[in-house]
Length: 76
Image (cartoon, rainbow, N blue to C red):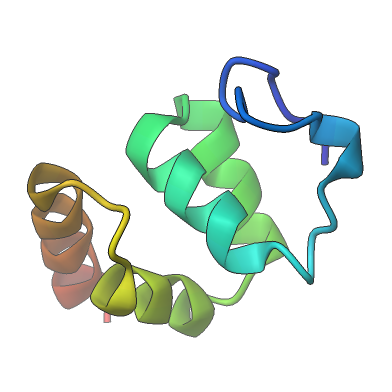
């Protein structure tokens, strides 16, 4: 997966490990990602893993958390 520098402004995207930094990646993409980046994380990670991040994240804004909570409620 290739990441935009502007999405991960506080680190170098090439240093991000997709498994070790899974929560970090999911939070950033769900909060700030473009459509194609959101599609990429849904291809890369299980819906259950993404849903767990949504439910337990301290980084997601209330608006993003509400959107993704409704999304998962409708798709499950």
